[in-house]
Amino acid sequence: MSTVTEKQPLPETLPVWDLSDLYQGPDDPCLQRDSERLRSESQAFATRWQPQLDNLWQQPQQLAEALAAYTDLQALAHDLLTYATLAWSVATQESQWNQLKDQLTRLVMQSSNQLEFFRQGLTHLRPARRETLCADPLIAPYAAFLDKVARFQPYLLSESEERLLQTTYPTRRQRWLDLYTQTTSGWSYTLHGQSLTEDAAMDFVRKADPAERLLGYSTVLQTYSENQDLLAFIYSSLIQDYASEAHLRGFASTLEQQAHDQSLRAEQVLYMLGEVQGREDLFQRYYRLLARQLGVPRLRSCDLNAPLRDTDWQVDWPTGIAHVLDAVAPLGDEVVARTRSFFERQRLHASLLPGKSSGAFCAPTAQDLPYVLLNWNGNYFSLTALAHELGHALHFAETVDNTHILQIMPPLFLAETASTLNEYLLADHLLASHGDSASQRYFLAEFIQRMMNGLYRQSLISAFEVQAHEQGAAAGLDADALTALWQQLASQRYGEALETLPQEQYAWSRIPHIFMMPFYCYNYTLSNLIVLALIDQYRQDRAHFLPRYRRFLRSGGAALPQELLQMLGLDLNQPAFYRQAFGVLQDLLDRLESLIGRPETDLQPKERGLL
Image (cartoon, rainbow, N blue to C red; front, side, top):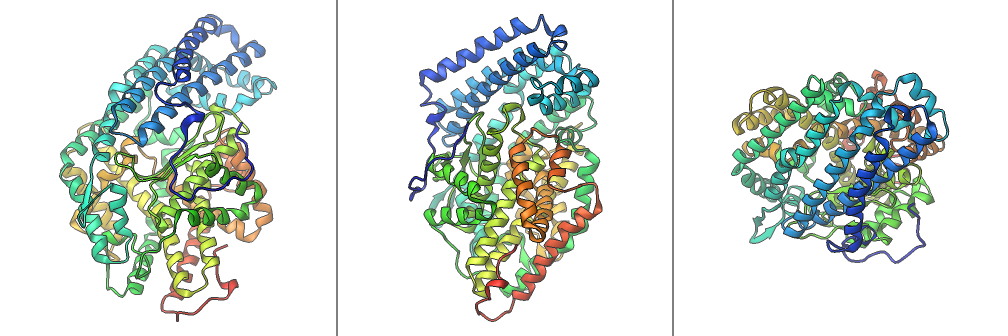
C-alpha cells in the first residue's frame, strides 16, 4: 500500500528516480528470485487449476483463491517488466538494459501464455452465473475485471491461438516498436553549435523569436525527412500487424478493436472527431488572435506553440514544484500531501540525458507509488508536463490504495482526466498569482494552446490514423502516401489561420503514439472535452464536485466505464455534453480577446484565474 510520508525537504536539483523499491539493479538477487518465482509459480498455477477449471465456477471459495493467485502473478509480472522498462527508458542505448528488457518481456509473455487458460475460462462464465458469483463477498472485489473479460469473449481466439500471438509478440510487434524507439532516440540535433536531444530541440518551437521557432521545427523535421522510408516501412508494417490481429478476432478494423477495448464504439469515436472538426472555427480563431497580438498577418505551422511574450518564461525546479503543489491545493490537503510524496520518495526522473526517452510518462506499480519520467527544461511546457504526469500519478496512487492490479486502469479516455484537470488547475493558479495584464495574456494563451493541442492536434492525429489504417490495412503505405495524407489533413485543420509549411508533411512520423498505441490520441481529445465539462461543474458547485471527483480517482478501473462517467455526472451520448465543453472554450477565447490590446495594468483579484 502506498502511504503519504511525513514532510521531507524537496529536491533543489533535477532528480533522477530511485528504482530500489522495485530492484537494486540488473544483478539484484531479488530480481533473479522474482523472475524464477514468476516462472515456477505460473507453471504451478496451471498445474493446479487447469484440471479443475470446469468445476471452478461452482465453488466460490476456490474461485476466489484462484483469482487471488492469478492477481499476485499479474502484479509480479507487471513490476518486473515495469522495472526493466523504466531502467531502459533513461538509457535506451545501453546493451544491459536492452537485454534485460528483452529477457523480462519474454518471461512475462511466457507466464501470460501459461495463464491464458484461466482468462479463457473466465470468458465462458454465463452472465447469470457471473452475476451470482459477483454478489458473493469473496468474488465481488474482482467484479469489474470479470465484466471486462466477459466483454471480450466474442473476440477471443482459441487458447493455442492466443498463446501463439503472445509468443510471437516480442519478435513480431515489439521489434518494430523497439526499432522505432532506438532509431529516433539515438538522434541528436545541432542548433547554434550545440548537440541537443529531440525534446531540447523542440523547445525552440516555444521560443518568442519566430526565427528560433522555425529553426527548431525545421531542424528536427529535417532529420525525420531523411529517414522517411524507414519510418514509413515500420509504420506500414505495424498497421498491417494491428489489422491482422483485429480481423482474426472478428473486428472490422483496428479502430473498432481499440474503441471496444475502452468500452466505446467506433461510431462514437468518429462522431466525436466530427464534432471537433465542426468547431474548427475555435481553433482558427485562437491562432488569428495570437497573430494579432504578435503583430503578424498570419502564423505558420511552426508557430503552433508560439508564446505571447518577448522573452521565454522560465522557472527553476524548486519553484516549479511549489507551483504544482499550490495548483492542486483546491483539491484538498490529502491531494497536496500525496502529490508531495512523489518528490519525497524520489519517484521522478527529470534530468536530461543522452539516450533517454523523449517526452513524458507515468508508470504505475502494482502496490506502491508510480514513477514519472519527464525531460525538464524549465519552461511553461515542462511545468505543464510535470503537472500533467503528476495527475496520472495521483490517479494511480489513489487507485492502488483501493483495488488491485487487475482493476487499476480505467478506460484510456478517463485515464487522462486527472492529468488534464491538473493542467487546468495549474493555469488557474498561475493566472491568479500573476495580476499584470501581460502575464494574464501569456498564461491564458498558453493554457488555451494546451487545450488546442488536446482537442485539435490530437484529433488531427486520430483523423490521420483513421485514413492511414483504412488505406494501409490491406496494402502497404509508402512515405509519399503518408506525407501527402498528413499535409492534406493539417492544411484543412489550419485553414487560413496558419500557413502549412512544406516541412509539416514529415510531422506524422515523430508521433510515437501512432506506432506504439494506435488510436490512443483520441483519448486526449475526449479527455479534454470531459475536463472542460468538469470545469463548468466546478465553477458552478465546487462543494458538490470535489467528493465525486475523489471517488472517481479512487475507483480506477474497479467500476464500469458508464459508472465512472455517472460519478462525474456526464453522458457522452448527449449533444449537451459537447455544447457544455465547447461553451467553456468559447468563454476562454472571449476572455483572451478582451485582454489583447489591453493597457499594461494590473487586474483586480476577481478578474484573475479560470475557475
